[in-house]
Image (cartoon, rainbow, N blue to C red; front, side):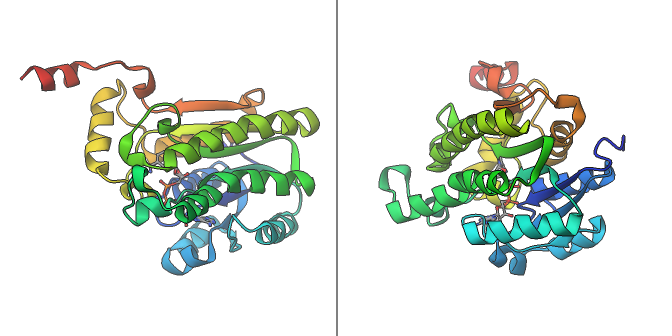
Length: 270
Ligand SMILES: NC(=O)c1ccc[n+]([C@@H]2O[C@H](COP(=O)([O-])OP(=O)(O)OC[C@H]3O[C@@H](n4cnc5c(N)ncnc54)[C@H](O)[C@@H]3O)[C@@H](O)[C@H]2O)c1
């Protein structure tokens, strides 16, 4: 299914770790739609992941970058513009990691060094990415920047832990930076609030299997898959959504507006 919606567009895609990654699926779809891009991930993830396969499949260059490092980001943006032959039209921030979750620390027993690290990687990095692009004037007019988030920013999901706070911050950064990017450079900034999705980051959340099954039963259209998310992202990178900015866009099969579903009622009526 290709409509060449991104023909002639250039960008950067952060966060493709393996074929389950939302960023991986997005890179494949962007490639099919005619977009060209640089792939990037943290140096450590490069060693563990399979990003070389994705680069070969999409004819892209890989530039390692720790998204918490301003120096790395500066290098990445400079090189991406050089390699791609001009300013950028799209950027995907698909990055998340909580050290507290990884180390099994409960929300009521946080290690604040872990909290600070997770916030830097998952939330502040989005500001750092945009500030780098902004200062280097690396985005074309009507460009589009997207980050991924989860509804735990609005409603409590106990096992989502400190990632809930990180996502709330991330969504706020999208609105705040979206104002300046829109006003001064005609660039749009949005977050996509995605259904639970079986990826490395997703499966790190305690009780993920119960979590994803519950969401499936609560969503009139069923959970949105990683491929669905990639398609939605393509639409946000395209010229068809030029006036959509500073939004948190729920992409969850209707979960966020469902009070209860028939399936869940039946389960509890047994
Ligand atoms: N999987 C879900 O259920 C789900 C639901 C809603 C939102 N999201 C969000 O989607 C995004 C992508 O996650 P995913 O589910 O595809 O999992 P994933 O594990 O495939 O991707 C997370 C990526 O973040 C990268 N990363 C971690 N630290 C980094 C750093 N310092 N610098 C650069 N990159 C770094 C990892 O290497 C990895 O590629 C995340 O923001 C996640 O929170 C996921």
